[in-house]
Length: 277
Length: 120
Image (cartoon, rainbow over all chains, first blue to last red; front, side, top):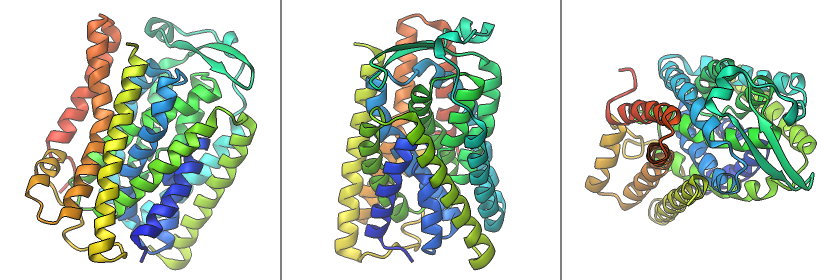
C-alpha cells in the first residue's frame, strides 16, 4: 500500500504534467495509485479533491491574466455539473472492475480525440451562431509566442453545452478532470483557441469536480489521508505547470498530452485484466 | 476591480489556505501515526452531506484528521465561492443572462452540498 509522502510526490509530478497539457493530474495519479494497491473507487473518490486542487492551483494565474473565458466557463458549467453528479452516482453503484475498464476506455477515447481534433481555424474567421452571439461568448488574449493580441468568437453554444454533459459525467464517474473531452469539445464544437481552451477547461474542472465530490462525500468512498496528500502534491505541481504553459508551443503540449493519455489507458487496463482491482 | 482580478485573488486565497491546512495535517499525520495511508474508519469520510462534513470538523478529536478535513472543505468551497462572487458581480452589473446562468449553478451546488447526494 502507498505511503503518504509517496502519494504527495506522485501527485506533484502528475499535477505538473496534467496542468501543462490540460489532461489533468488525476488521469495520471489514479492509475499510479491503483498500481500501488489503492482500491480503484477510493482512488477515484479521493482524486476529485485533487482535481479541484489542480483547477484552483492553475486557474488563479490564468483567470487574473485574462486567458480564461469566464462567461463561457459559467455557461458550460451548467452542463458539466449535471453530468458530474450522474457520473458519481454511477460509480457508487457499479462494480470496481467496470469502473477500471471504463477508465481505460475513456483514456483510449482521449487518445483518439487527440488524433481526430485538428488545430482550430483562425479565431477571427469563426462565424458565431445566434445563441453564442446572444450570450456574448467571445474574447481576446495576448499570445507571447505570436507577440500580439488574439481576438476570438465562439459558436455552436448549445451543441457544445450538451456535449459537456457527457464530459462532466466522465469526470464525475472516473474522478478525473476530463480535460481531454472538454478541450476537444471547446476546440472542435465551440471553436475556442487552444490556450483559451486549456485554461477555461482548467477552471471548469474545479466546479465539475466539486459536483462529483459532493456525491462522494456521502458515499463512504473518500479517504482523507489519501485525498489530502493527493491535493497537496497536485496543487504544487499544477502551480508550477501553469507558470510554464504560456511559454510552451501548442504542438509540444499536444505531444505530451498524447504520451500521458497512452500511459494512463494501458496501466489501468493492465491492472484490471492482469492484477484485478 | 475587474471580475477576473477578484476571482483570481479568491481562488488563490482558497488554494493557499487549504494547502497550508493540509500540509500541516499531513506533517502531523506522518509524525504521529507513521507514513502508510490508512483505510481505517477515522480516515474514511462517512458524512451524510458536505454540510455535515464541515460542521463535524469542530467535533473531531484527532488534530491531523481535523486539519485535513478543514483543508479539503476549504478547497471544495473555493469553486463554490467563485460561483457566488460571480453571481453577485453579474447582479451588480445587471448582466441578467449571466446572472440567471450563474444562479442556476449556485442553486444546484447549494442543494448538492446541503443535502445527502450519494445513493444509499
